[in-house]
Length: 446
Image (spheres, rainbow, N blue to C red):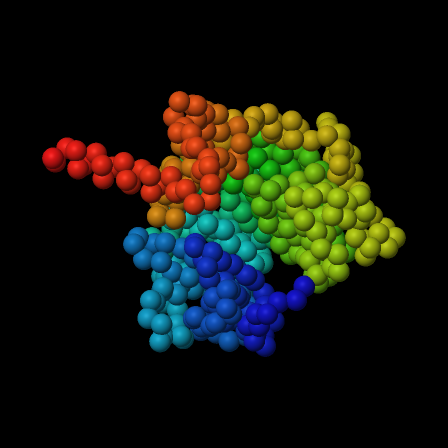
């Protein structure tokens, strides 16, 4: 895929993020620095200096603490770095603020590999040694500490004595469940997903579900929290239906996998969903970025010769699969778990699909469009508001213009004055009328 923008970054990129307005692109590099660009024209806005050179940036977020905005950076330097938002355009280089006291005394002892924002003031960070710290960003204090040994207590005693604990049950990725609920979702190295409830004096492990046979590499959820997208280190993609998933009972549950397929030949580095289009975007270490539907249908790979249109399903690559995935000789399948069936493959009937309703009539869509126009502001929409307030006769036509709403009236015969045809070319009917008018005026004044 060709692009006219060139950010001129010589250091390998380790992570990407956007600000709250989605106007600025934040890029983290392996040398510990981060840069903020205007993704419309590629201009460099800010250069976030590293506290220690050579320490890779693992995650970037834009946070609001109190009434101020900051850029948060975590990575292999094992610390929480906050960069203030500076409005001065001539200031390019920005240095981090001082470290929190708990970050120095009670912080991570190993490299930070993932981070997630929970609610308005909570930050969860996971390190390479399998430890999760819950931070209060307002006070800078460590609220809770989740150790790797605690995940097996009262959940599955057999795993506690197994070799997997000694080999390193590391947390590989973190994500928040919903905006209003303080539930942390963590991906594990053994292919399971853990759900923690952060309400209360200490985090509570409320659910564990086995998903893959490989380490979970990335997690993402829809805005409503009904679908969870997972990627593992083998290139497999999983969609979990959390609509009926119970977060009240603390027990190991069967994975509610709605669909699973192999989308890449290497580790999945990112999964991002476009909820209104029901499109899933994935990237991998195999240098490919692909688009899929929520049913697992293959839309295409970014940069391919044939262009696709999301509104036209005939332009998709589906029902074919990527060539590199098709050439793979082995495809590991998820073992059938006790007490449940194996996950379904892409293209089958999905429970979440049955909950989506598409029975909106044309009148309902027109009313929704008019409600959106009325709630919007701006002079450019004044004409659209006037056009939306049309008679009932024109509501059925969504392309109604101003001239289409004009009423047509018949002209009666009594209103039309008939003109007599002149008898010769020299006769002028207007001259005759002017003579008659002069004669009438002469008689009146005489």
